[in-house]
Length: 293
Image 1 (cartoon, rainbow, N blue to C red):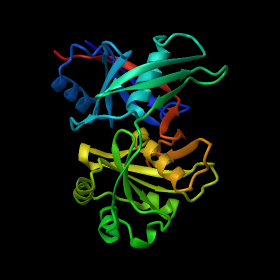
Image 2 (cartoon, rainbow, N blue to C red):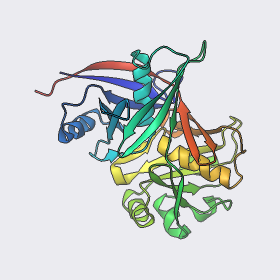
Image 3 (tube, one colour):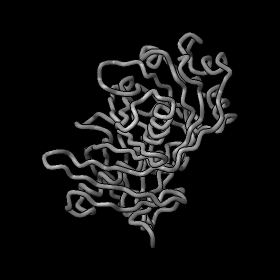
Image 4 (cartoon, rainbow, N blue to C red):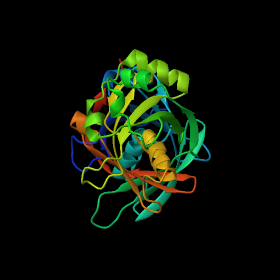
């Protein structure tokens, strides 16, 4: 029997945010078994907790329903640490720093327990890297079911990474973000040429909620139609906004996502020089057992 849990990440109440399936004690599982379990749960990502060996506290491996392994520190990792904190496996101090192994990287994780507030997990992402720009507006908007006028003139679509490279596409309004419809084959071809894994459409047009950006995420390259909260894309976007002056330096960058799916999510990113820190709260919403034989 395999224990599993569901965690709503970047959420302050059940059935919002980004749902994560989590399997602890996964050292005995093979990669094909992990991939099959991820396919069974059919969440955007399923995370497996393994012994990290020396140099880290836990080793995290995450898979999509299509069997693709996901790197980077996003909701896949943040949800795992929220579960670890919920289970009392990170101690009971007001603040503690631990380390996680994801792929070839070992990254710091801070668990904060403010009095009277939900536990918040703060994770380091990788050093920002800026990749290719996509300048064929007609082809890009066609792949997103949009018209050229719906692109923003404030920035050029570009691949940016803080662990996982994603194509950031600036749009003029929140209505344009909500209107996007990903044509998987065409979008996947653009992403492959640009060196991006997923596509993060966003706008800096305000909606009165104090967010620096309003976003949606499509990832046809790993079988994710749309993701309600994407930490590995929020980090690169925060860096891009700050470097271009479209977000206020010295302040947290808040990003809204998931509204189009009915799962509103709020992601916080803090950037100091090249240090990118993603944070959020959430809650464990369910558990059960899975039979493999």
